[in-house]
Length: 369
Image (tube, rainbow, N blue to C red; front, side, top):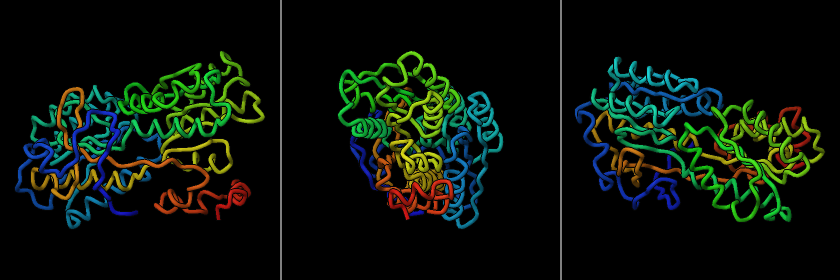
């Protein structure tokens, strides 16, 4: 896993974004929430939103824990809880972290609005909150994520490219968006529509409850029934998990040739579907870079009361706060052509993990060796 390359300025951020600059230049949001006298003996609370998506347990949690240990000379402690996609449970978990008197809280919100009260309670208790991956509301001290509108644009552009000559205004596509409780889902949709809206016809669009593949599968069955299986020219899927449910529905409908289906997160099953051609693409996001960045932010705020000056930040506005210091990480379109240069090179998966006996022939066919 490579170290975080944080000197990145976002130009298309899906929330209000100011000019890039150092942490010292981007306001004092991260400088007034913690004592500047903490040493390495800090406790970091880590609240992740769910365990349906493979990334959280495989990448985010272990990388954050390792980085915090490195930055605190092995003395820092991590208190970890997973909300399992339940907003009420996550609110209780914030209370638990306050009771445990953690020095800083890393929060990936289930419901970005529902956590606002908990974030305020943490601030009132002297605990700064760093929003991770999703920009929560409330008095957030710092934030790191990907350029979420750019993710949607990347997906939309890949879908049009895969559709080729079928990418006409009369062509019908289905949009399988994420959960409305996740603020990123709206940005993905906005970015995708900015590319797709004048090129094709969105025949059906769904906001998929809890991002669950089974809900996407049910939605897709409804779309197939309403539109007709042979009249669907492409499917925008906001992530890989839902893409799996969508593709299962398409195959169950008896399609001999699947329309192109997008994805996001570079999950192993998604990469394997890309290898076989069932899924057209995913969006590769460097979770190691994002996780290492949030760990650096959290440790810096806990120990010194401000962000490390080496972090190149911009600022974002949430629904309740303005000028939140932020680091935005770039994204890459993942296709058959760059599997080696993305997920394998970054250490997400080995060649053997991708090219199991079931996928060996498909790997050989695309030259993945």
